[in-house]
Amino acid sequence: MQQCILDAQLTHYFIPSQSAIHCCVIKGNKATKDVAALLQQNKFDVKAILSPTVPKGQERLRICLHSYNTKEDIKALVRLLKELLTP
Image 1 (tube, rainbow, N blue to C red):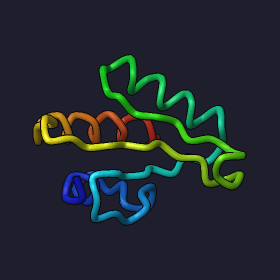
Image 2 (spheres, one colour):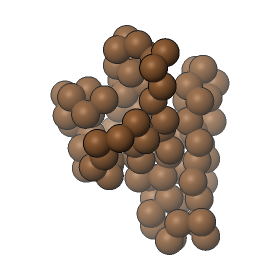
Image 3 (tube, rainbow, N blue to C red):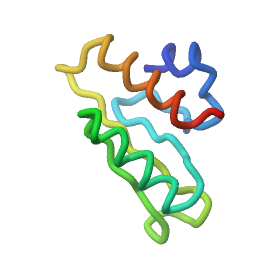
Image 4 (cartoon, one colour):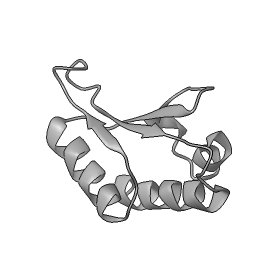
């Protein structure tokens, strides 16, 4: 996942992680929910973590990787995130 994030130049959105759980920070409850909904429509099981669960301005997507996720799955997720997050 880390290499895909680096290749897509999205590192500034992600909290560094060495685990199977990755967090993509998207400021604002509405923006975070909107991106999560679009990812879910594309069959990615990504959860929106909203304030007040996290501090305002630190809302995020929670991405959990599993053994059944392929490299192609991860690349497709990051590619779609890039489309959604960059102008």
